Image (cartoon, rainbow, N blue to C red; front, side, top):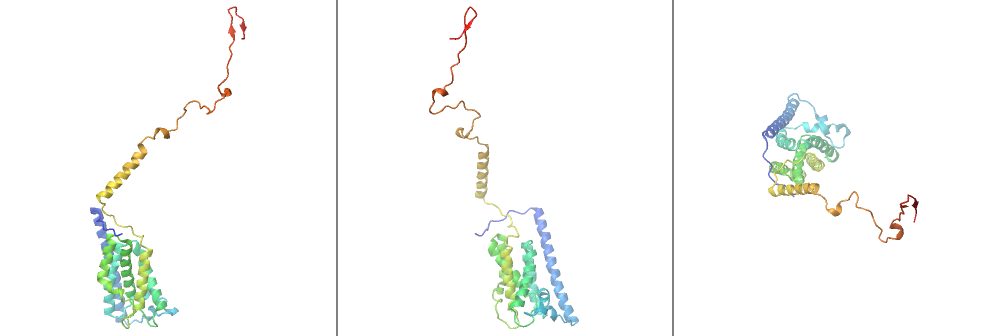
Length: 270
């Protein structure tokens, strides 16, 4: 069931906290992109040979590329294309899923690289496209699984900008690492299913009939706690002597004889 109930109006303190968190997310993602651009500039400016940091499938010497390959880009167009996806999807993921993103980002990063190392063609694979595909599928599948308003809105926004990633996980263009795309997409789906309960659902406004049901349930609970029990449910402290269903002479008691006092003062029993 899709929950489309509108949320309650936020308080000023909540608006301020959300604005601060959004600014921190923007600054963090922007700094990461600046780092990617600086690394690309240094690589081409100083003619650095960073091939050892790429992924070469099934070559143990290139396992380090699982961690470093997303930082490398072959051209400026390659860098700019991935930067747009990293910026939009990174902000969506970190802002909407602050708790889940802490585990989703490293999980997607590692699984995308390992999957490429295992199934990739015998070539050098670089670029952050595996990460962007992982983030897109993470946001999209999270919206399908969680079904709250903000998750659905984030999923629709991700699909509107990057819905074409659904087909780029298959081989289409030469020189494009579809293996990296596919591995990242599978990693994003896995992370979305694994971390679907990591971030709590946002608060939502309740309908009047929901409030009435809660009030009725609370009144019923108070009534059950304060209403005295019925007489047949009360255990008395003492309700008199118990008599047998079939009384006999031995249970009727004993006759006590008292001495008869004569006027003469002598006592005689009769």
